[in-house]
Image 1 (cartoon, rainbow, N blue to C red):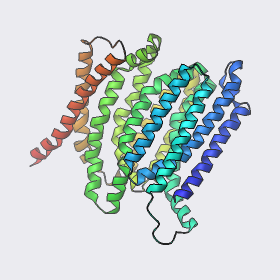
Image 2: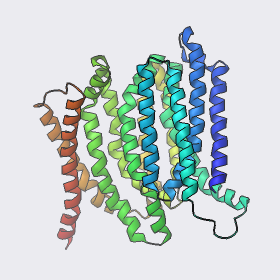
Image 3: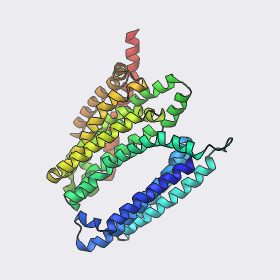
Image 4: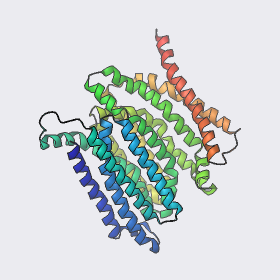
Length: 414
């Protein structure tokens, strides 16, 4: 199964990466309105981006296999080392004032090393074959039944998170791409944080669902979502409150004007956490067809609105398109994905929504009042300190409420 999936995704990565490089060398770079001296460098950058895409597809096979085997410490160790290596490499190349294509080349080397190490670790941790190997046709059928909806979800994710740069570059300007990258930075950090929390539960849910342990699955869906929100909402609230300070300290005072779209962009994750664990549970129980259909429809809506709004509203246009896609996906998951998982709407409201969101509003009010008495952060250390205070205030109130509310409800019902 790993060999087949690896071969399939490696071929897909080569196809997509090669298409990206061919697009650049066939004149596609000209669509981005780059100055003439940067055209040749742009071609090299696109080619290296295609190589990175190819390596990412290949490396994901082994990383996802390790996650399925619940080898999280090894997976985390390799990816942490790759992240540190990539950051250090980028810093060294940037400090040497080398061109951007050399930065991407160094990152491609780090990504290749990561893929090779993940491959070696995966093959060592795979269990020994038990019995005769199933026919390739049978394995491909299993891959198709489970993998096709997941591939559609990945396609939807690609549309959501990668096409905005292209739309702005082609329809507005290269400067708009930079502004969007800055605006979306906090959003992407929060997305990675909450995604990491959710994906770690998938193997657990799959195992307990296969055993018929409905009680354990319900614990994940209700209690797990409640405590997940208690962790995610402090990060969301802190990111929104300090978005202007973050941009000012990161890039300079002139970038602080993008604080509002950055905060609006992040705000979605205050509600997306409601569907993270149920979505992971649906994937773990192979109930992904409806989830993938919702994701693809929402992604198409996002793409259409972004194309329509970007020429007039720039960064705000693609932000609005993304949020519109989210706004469609969230209630659709409640309507079409939750019932097959056995999630009761009334119980979800009592055990997940009410214990967390009133406390989050209270914490936000306290933090906004406190900010009037705190001096604006003057540097990275003060930003981290004030951000930590905000996260502690949010996290303490939300965790206390998430723990106390269900016990209060249970006591009152008795």
